[in-house]
Image (cartoon, rainbow, N blue to C red):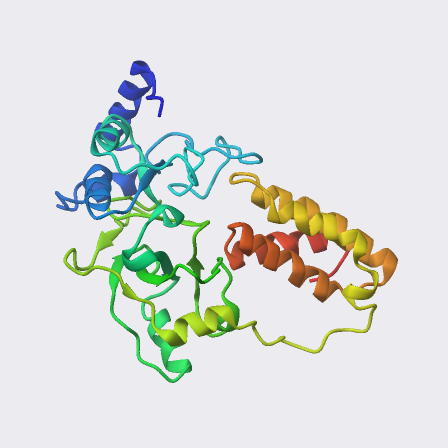
Length: 319
């Protein structure tokens, strides 16, 4: 990984010392001596979780990369990867010290790069509010299984091991409508402990001695079960009867590379809805196919649905 030029590092260090925003300054003064991105990254790699750098909200502009992403106008600070995270992650402590000790960066955890015990893979459940996964477990008639947890600005990340034989993406499956949050599978990432949210809140481990536990059966079943349709589909030609021209668009979304997935999905959805209007295809079936492809490619279900809804409006549909 290429280090930033010395002048850039000096400027970034000056930003850190000065406190480039009130929220970051408050985080620095909170007394969390072991809550820096470097400390968090070192803890993660020592426990087998590969890391990579992401944007830090204390920088004057977003340091994230990706086609269609404008660092100068980015408002979702502290989360964008600075490298192609599906391949540019590391478990090397010296590289971690260089990356996070010499420049302001938050810590990303490459979910797909984690090798669990007995050929398991990492699965992270991202709750958008405290108690969200507990409530979801109750909705399915079960109790939440405590596991490795990192608190976030809105809720928490729960780390689980899932069987390597399961093809889990970032889709919610039957959790849709019963869970406030997202899941991160092999093609996803989460922000790790020691990082700073744009609000100044630190991402923190609840219990450093608590490792991930096997994902409960109810959760795995829910993620593999298609969600029930929210309402009957409107009249129109079923996708299978007139959607041959859409196969290429779905394939493009499936094959989109990291950093280009959201823009590719938006483009494909715009073209798909234009075609659906001409052929009188079922727009719900079109949207569902695109969202499924996007979550399989690595976007979260919430991200995919937002992009598809935006494309639908651009194509002349109503919300």
